[in-house]
Image 1 (tube, helix red, strand yellow):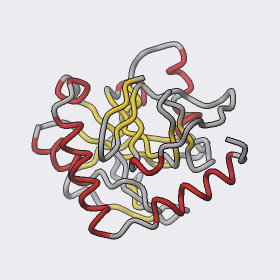
Image 2 (cartoon, rainbow, N blue to C red; image 1 turned 120 degrees about the vertical axis):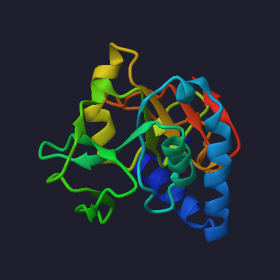
Image 3 (cartoon, one colour; image 1 turned 45 degrees about the horizontal axis):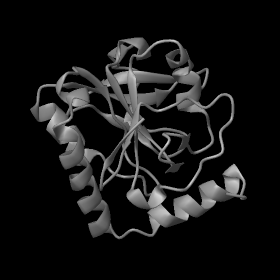
Length: 191
């Protein structure tokens, strides 16, 4: 693909934003169906999820499944050093808007877990290819936070996306962190 990462990011963000509210709900439910029986989840206790923004595939149905299965969920919060902190996420966790307008738990009443102690991290993405390469939003938050996964296998990083965000090939930079797999509303790509 001859376009730059920023051009590709713009195109793919427009593609996911073009989905209707009904398509978004349906995609989130299909994503949950695909992931709910996978051993990556059934064998895990500490799972990081995110709150969808800007047309990202919505993991609400997956979150509800995890809560009902007795799993501990965590949400990312942008820390002072632009790394992500992970805070326990319960149905009654109060949320505040971060600098990007995305809801996240307040640090005041936070129960933190270190990223190394998470079993699975569901990572939002802008684009992906079948080799498991991920194009994020460009802030590098997940790449910085999980740079340590270059040398250890835990946590599993699983990218979540709409199938329409798949492209032939994602250009890679040396700081990009590889995914363990990518799940969409139509299938799971093992990497």
